[in-house]
Length: 226
Image (tube, rainbow, N blue to C red; front, top):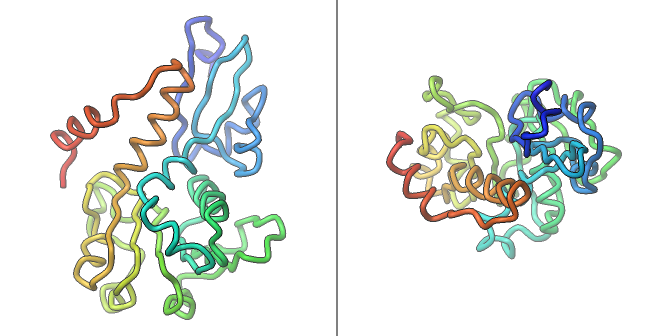
């Protein structure tokens, strides 16, 4: 935190579990960050520390071809942290009709009175799955080193059939959840592109320059395990 006050400081990315903690650290929040209730990008501007959120933008970019499929439909999200808040904001902006939040402690998620959010536990999420068009893993399940974990039990993977299955975990690129989706006949979307696009927007906020997306994708393909 002390480094943030240095004249040479341009900004930083904030990751879990600090996306909500830094709300009380910054001098100002963008309107988007206020509405989301979490920040992932710090920008030094005119001596002030501004809190931004580029996660919503990063989440939307990889699913632009599916926007029409999502409008007016139901989406299930596993997780209730800072990333989930950005995803909820993004899905609302796309016209998703209903969002089901699945977490170990569903009562901990504050939905600000929104009528289109249902909160449930891992014990009863399947009751909402049949009519969902997309299922999102916004938990660390499946991330290295716990690569054999998934929010969906192996005996229930048939529920992923013909659903968009989006995992925001990017290391490894193909998580167990995505493998389950492929096996069940779902459409897998990994978290690497979300990482790249949110980073690209953050980079632009810091420098005013365009991010070399394709070069970065190529480099990450070399270094990240599949």
